[in-house]
Picture 1 (cartoon, rainbow, N blue to C red):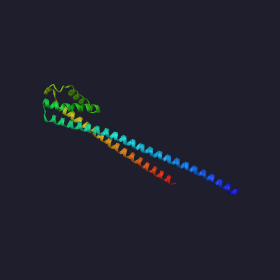
Picture 2: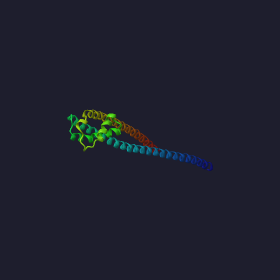
Picture 3: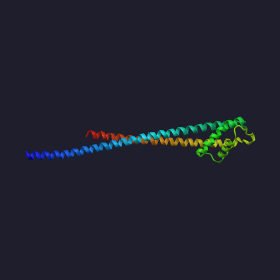
Picture 4: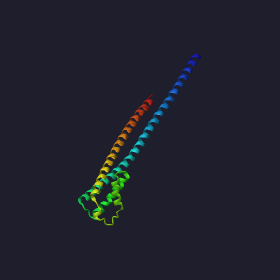
Length: 193
């Protein structure tokens, strides 16, 4: 009986040690998988927040550029409609030109001629009549059309950057989503064991 007892005790101790080790390893695997899932989900949430902030900036910049383009188009149309614009026409256009040239300067667009036109409109007090012979609408129109082209190019670049940002975000979310799914499946499998 004592030999049987010793054999059982040995067998129980060995199995108990193996089972205890297996349980500890299983719990560690579960903890590692859970931590990996939580980290990936946190990265996905952070990516969503960054994407939301990027979209907000894009929408603001796109609206600014769209507004500037529309204002420039209207200003050019007014100046082209009259070869010798009246004071009222010049004053109505001057605010638009000021805003557009300041925006162009802030974006690093335009050039020397844009700066010259900007300074002309910025220095001119809107309440003081601008003499017709000092105003050369042709060069102003050409400059504004150039500025309009620069704004269009800037808007296209902004759009291309937004498309790229959306694609990168979608790819990141897809990769992390697949990672979470795989780790969740692995976690489910370890719980079945």
